[in-house]
Image (tube, rainbow, N blue to C red; front, side):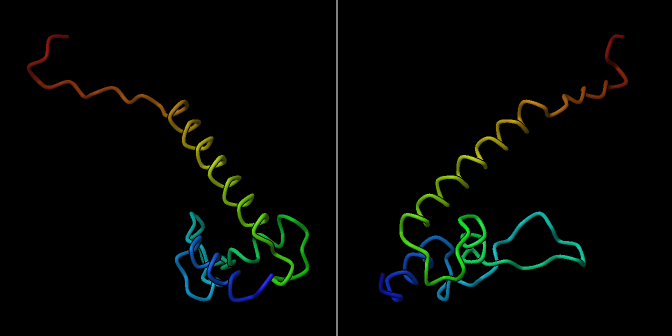
Length: 93
């Protein structure tokens, strides 16, 4: 695969020109480690470096992330506690 076409595909996924921009996430503490999408794909599929990434890896990674986010969203909705509305002073008890 030609490197320039890979870079264009990664830019499409991340919105980043160089494909190495860290993804924002919930971890914002002082021990936060910025990890690029390229690094995540390499780790997910046991690749040694970005030169081994194919379009199939990218498409699979994006599809898996979307499914995981949908599951997370569904679980959050399912397990979100219902907080009762506070009664106004003139509400009947």
